[in-house]
Length: 295
Image (cartoon, rainbow, N blue to C red; front, side, top):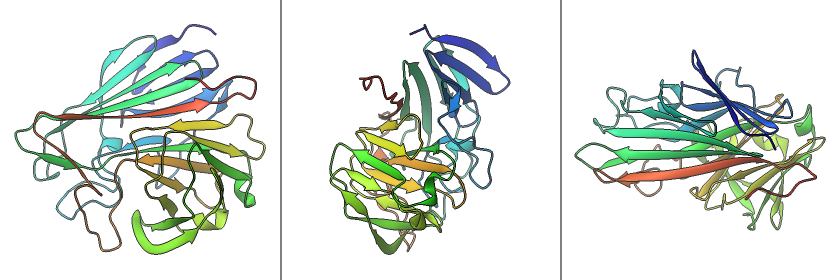
């Protein structure tokens, strides 16, 4: 395995390479914008409206925000320009120290996002710090979107998701970034879920209280399975778009608003005392058929 190499930032992009992986990051949202394995894309290209994000961080809200928060759906972090504060051959670190005017009754939250590339793994760590003098609240989640082989979602069961724990038998239907009152029965056998394309015609699925310690995405004609790890998350969202060969496996720490638009601390929000910080992690791992799983 070759040593990681780092290329200095040009405009808004920073690039790293390690072995068979190559990654590109943007100052906008401190986002992982490109991930290639042996020259083949692992992530969605992101050139699509209304969601131009291959791997956004959702902060400080998931879904639609409270009416008194002047921030876009899924939060402002994905659109803000972060400062590049550190870069080495293995890691890049971005930081955002300002918040948009009108957010959360003047909460003061600093967000630092680091990306580390090692072997077949890309690790992302996010640290949220309350630098204000009053308690703050926020929602948080990861939103990686993976590239699938052509027409992989044309037939039920072509795409599967495996976990190390048993999956629930039903999921909540998501529409317009909110939970609905409708549930969908899942085709799950033990720790393997068969994806049914018709469930994603109008939105996504939310699997509450589902472990994201390790999730493995497989698809028909997919050269390399992809694993997503996030011990921080308590919920899992799945999303795709009709006619597009993409699939999103999203570890969420908090929930989006319900149909009534209600928000509760402990469900839609975490509480953070003045001077305190929280750390969340996610890893994307490419699993070559001939190699072991990275640790």
